[in-house]
Image (cartoon, rainbow, N blue to C red; front, side, top):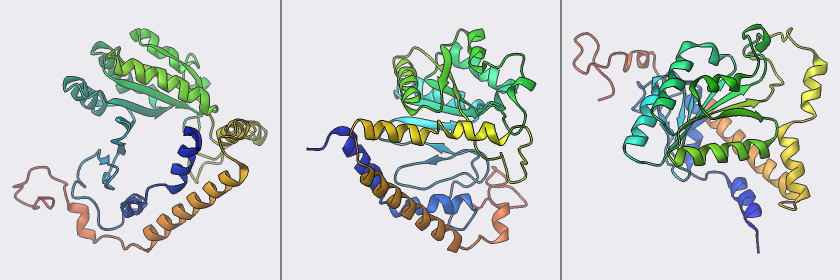
Length: 285
């Protein structure tokens, strides 16, 4: 008899058998056969479809968990979560952003309204210490980003973002609070990135020794140790999962690379929201 943890691992190894999963990476590369909702700046990716935005961030909404994920903070968060609360959907939005994003005024506007209306949202700051290349110490009077929630009397706190168990526990508590109509939470996930922010990032703001120290507490290594110590899976089972996942990723990569680019005229699709615009016809009707 399999325990719940082992069964979860086996489900992970199978991934999503829906062939539409192949479309997600293709959409990222701007290839053809894009969604008819191309013009929206935010778009859902549902379990049985592969819709993605023409520009802007991606919004994931897995039906089975009734959780929503949105990158960055702006009016979309307020509109989405206000609707969830109004219609009593019991949905919870997880809003991810980096440590650089919290220096924007819209972040504080969003925190204020979310707390004022007790919206079901969890704000997650992935603090890797350097944003795009400037350390937190050089951009803020204090380095504890989670304390920004105190100004709005919002439940908030730091989390060891390199420890998957700590992350799961903190999110579980925050999500339960949101579902109980107790309002939002601000969590600062203190984490790290091993590579530069982009290909042009020379990473002169840190040392190789610092990067190597963080590699020693890599989240994947930590969770693998937990899995093995608790007999949730064997080394062989984990290796099989790695092999299957890599195979699926390569399959998606090949599908995306082999897909053709759209015609240049697609650039003009959905530029104008007005369907009866006089000069360029609306292509998505």
